[in-house]
Length: 395
Image 1 (cartoon, rainbow, N blue to C red):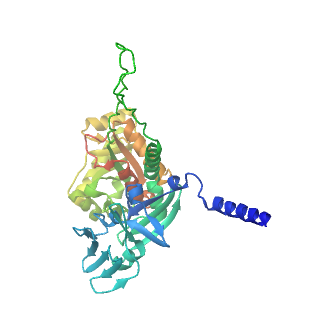
Image 2 (cartoon, rainbow, N blue to C red):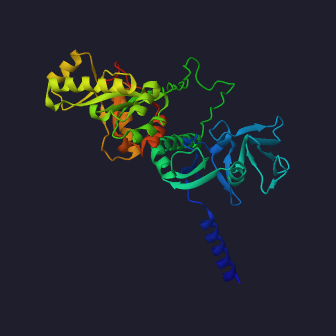
């Protein structure tokens, strides 16, 4: 009988050991939240989680994001209302019910942790015609809530946001370690002195706080070569405020009237791309011919010039004629690199040139598939595209 009891105890102990999660599993595996093409902050207080097989996301995913959903919590914090146009959903936190403005009920309920309300993802997606994905990534998981305005696929978004997720994950782990370190208690000073009279009192040094790190701001001037006006035009809508300069060879201007007029009206800058291998006089003649073609097509001329294969003498002559030469600090044309590597290269080049740099992205065909993801990644790195002009052209 005693042997049986011992075996039973050993078996129960083994089962208890198997049920304990490995050390660090709770802190090292995280779940990021993204809304469309924006990565949200990472924190324990707002991290998505599963409960009884239901995936929950913090209400911040629907507050002020580009999903177009408005969020409101009652003054007594007993209910939450979310609405978009005529779609309204009401979470009664006390009764644990979910209803819409049309009287439709959903099974399930919202969960409150601290002062954060977590909502069931499936219900939100069904009510507001959204969808979501739950992906395994290097740092844990990524929950991405998406509307019909999403631009990037999950794979391209993860590639573009990898560097940002890595930085936030490192910061998250550092905060976890600092929180885990116990704060040393200060010993109580006795009322009766125990040290000899006249002995100096030793004071604990005041910890010196490090100054806050300034956010690095970067500026990039994009240059893209036009090979086909129909392929270049869609790129302009992805860059706000016309923050791009398009290169045109003199013989590639004819037939691009609509694109050139769009650029002239604020869609971007125009520069002539000249083959300067034929010498100085040939180069100057091509520039003049290109400007005449620009004038016929869109009533504009340009002083921005990109020279291929120019000698110092030719470059000097072109400058003396009053033109401004574009010099790219980074050439990504035909690079075939991933978006994360392209982004890292641009940020590094900007840092080496005082926070600003001119980047040649390649042809319209080469950049069309990666531009949106690249912009997302650069935005996460505090890098803003700005239109090139005659002052910043050589950076």
